[in-house]
Image 1: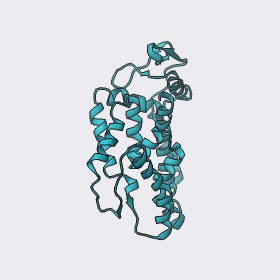
Image 2: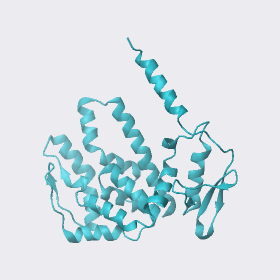
Image 3: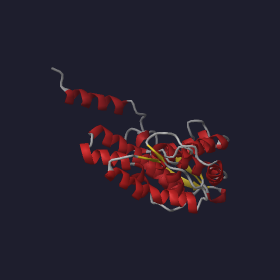
Image 4: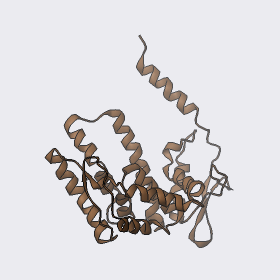
Length: 250
């Protein structure tokens, strides 16, 4: 009979050994013009996977990215470097493609998580009301973008004027803010939750809890799966990193 524990251990060792070795000793931050900063490894500038200079728009963000590089051991594990990965995405994937990223975020807002309500049970309906109604009030009162509700998964067409206002809120953001907002929207299924964090109306923790009302209700009824818990923790790490990017550059 196979030893599942030994197999898992071997798989973990193999995964670790496949990671690139740490090739540097010193990590430093160098100020750039306009309040930005770059990262230096043993005095040499870091580049993104797309070979662009890894320049951060704020020194505080550069210091946070530098801390990720300093924390690496003998091997470099990208999963423990969410800020670095987001910075790479902003530079390689958003710069020059801002309209497409805006389109994607705005498209999520057209079928936003908080607009789709359960028909029951009563406890879930109430939890959705408590966590999601304030988000819709934020959209209505501050973004001037009232949205319609639907029960179940039946699509509801949102007012074009409201979608236009949400789009206006996103347009004009810098590439790092757009990248962060895109990550938060994709992880939660809600552009409104991401915008509420951007505007300082919700903390990252509050937005994350609101995004998982349905999941938390299911956990309360049936318990939590260990693998699902790990996936959620990893997703939270990326969400928190995106929120930190917004906090350091706004």
